[in-house]
Length: 108
Image (tube, rainbow, N blue to C red; front, top):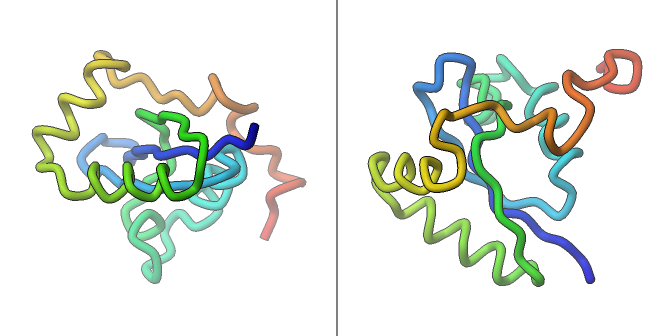
């Protein structure tokens, strides 16, 4: 069974939330990390590469639908969603992959 993910990342100060969808969560987190500071992407511009929340979906269409639902939520609703699974807002990157990414493997 394939895995698809809907996720929320944040910046180091936890002041910005970014919602996305991916079929390879580890790779997507590395991409966000490599894009840090890039003004051409929202996650890059705001340094949103710290994972706060994620959930699996069995199909891409279900993950995309969930992404749309979360994006439509208010900041308060997103915070409540995160708090259900991660009340202390720990960065979850190291629970899904080796973090930080290997600088040799991820060099630009």
